[in-house]
Length: 315
Ligand SMILES: [Zn+2]
Image (cartoon, rainbow, N blue to C red):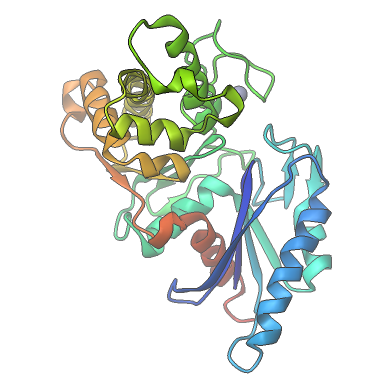
């Protein structure tokens, strides 16, 4: 199956076998301002090239897609804040483009599936996958099943408000968690803090447009005070939010996936401390925060393919 993970910045896709093994994967810029069809055509060109070269070894059965604001029920992607597509039927578009069966789900749900079948959540029945990239997504698994909710969109933790006078979000609201806890959120925090603090920081020397979460991570690892404070602030907001969700849903673990998760202990250890300090006693010291257990942090690609394997296994 071809698993496609559409992000606000990059689209990652790969050919995945039934056991979760990724045969080959690719990453291309999403070009979020161009139409969805254009992206599908670019994915197909690369996929076709690979399939042609390996035609005696592999056969493509179907396609699973993880995308922001995607509905498993309708196949629609509805006004994703980080893509300028409006509402499109991606199942139809991809189906026409590839001439193969297509199933779609929210990108965070795809990550949750990937982690449950092949990754850090193997054997767990109640957990929440958090994807940290251009935005913040969450896939909630309850009693071994993805929780879609009445409208199919459950799990929008990224747009839970943490400050109603806070930063403006791509969704049109203010103070959404993903304005702070995401790659662009980390950059915004670093810029704000480097303007406020008197301490020496390399962040001030980097032009704003060249600043990235990766650069801030590297600086924090070298002990840059403002970069460290940026991660402390980010971890605090994430920790409080995970505590709120934990007390509502009761998961055994949070699995942290996506680009920003590569910050590792810098983010996860502090997030765990802050989460614990905001939990009431009967939730304390039980809930794990784990990094993605899927190779290359590719849980959304593997999960999207896993969705396709579950849906089209008789293909
Ligand atoms: Zn929002």
